[in-house]
Amino acid sequence: MDRFIDIRLWERIRNANLAEDFAFDIGFSRNKEGVGFMLRTILGLEDISIESVETQKSLKNPFGHSAVFDIFARDSKGNLIDIEMQRQAGGWKKLSKRMALYSGLLTLLSLGKGRKYSKAKDVYVVFILDSDIAGKNRFSYKYRYMDTEDKEELKEHNVTLVLVNGSYRDTIESVESCFCSDLYQRDVNMIKCPEMRKALENVKGSEKAMRKTYKVIKELYGDDIEKSKAAEFKKGALSGKKEAMLDIAVSMLKAKYAPAEIASITKLSLETVNELAQSVDSQS
Image (cartoon, rainbow, N blue to C red; front, top):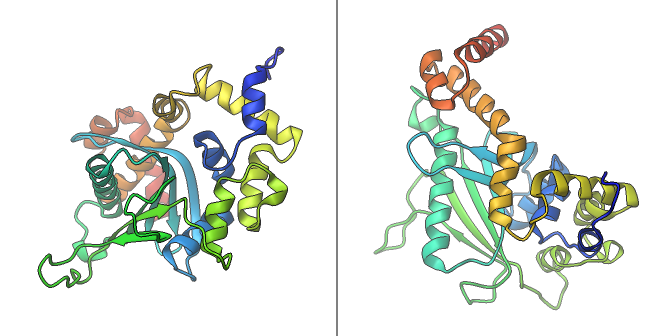
């Protein structure tokens, strides 16, 4: 903790809601219950069970543009989910292409080398926006591959793209309406959904929580929290890059890639990859 407190940052934490980048990351970090609630609300999958959650997950694409996911989750069936608190959409052209990139990266991750295409797990990419970009006053919009003429969905495909309208409210206080309202609620005690309340408590529910949040922001965002995208990549580089490369290396080993090839792609040392290979072999 700094000897001298940055009062502006402290007040920003005190006034934060879950829609802010840093609060979204900290509130849902390793929070399987909170992420499970979000996905049940957004996707309508009542039986979904979350096995793991990572925030600011770096995923390196050796062939092109890489990505840092706000929330990267895996469910009990091995399906992969990305949740982005995007706020401003930046227009359809930018938004749709970014969602397509993210879904492609997750699909690659879900299917190892040499495995049958039929074994690929389901992939969900969810972007939560401040406004209703589609303009139809709905809570969410789900997009899947389909024939453009007769609108018939491509059978057995595994990708679902979802946009959430953060401005959605209804008069019956549905769970979807409460979820959106809770995202922007700054008073912990006014949050209606217990899972959302717990997430904001992780950020600022006590002085201890606020001190922890302050420390994380200072370490990962420095003094320029406003540059959110630069901060995201900095955070990924500091706290997630090596871990992400290790995860990718393990997946590639299980998919029977050669250690030398893995070392070249991930930039890990061959010694590290060989140690991982021994660990993977001992578990199989």
